[in-house]
Length: 100
Image 1 (tube, helix red, strand yellow):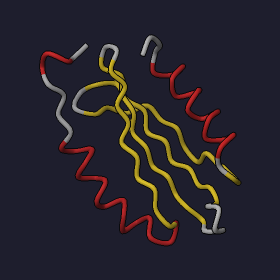
Image 2: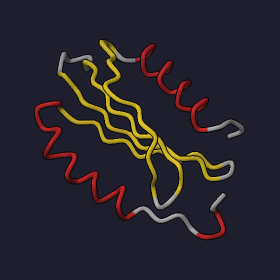
Image 3: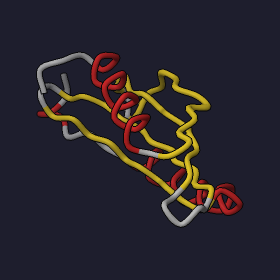
């Protein structure tokens, strides 16, 4: 990856908007994962079967390595699923040699 986090995330939003039916970005915020600058996105879209889905994604760049953690679930189950993803974001550790 040879770009900065905002440029990468803008491209991801364009890809999601073009690829998912009824894509609606609720929030895109800057955050931190293990002390590294990251982005968190929350959005909804409609599956090919007509289900309302919620997507929550965290993304960070470490040098030329792009990492994203994505949770997608049926929207009525989002609160339940989000409790699982809290464990991902709080337990993620970047190896010292990879830090930018």
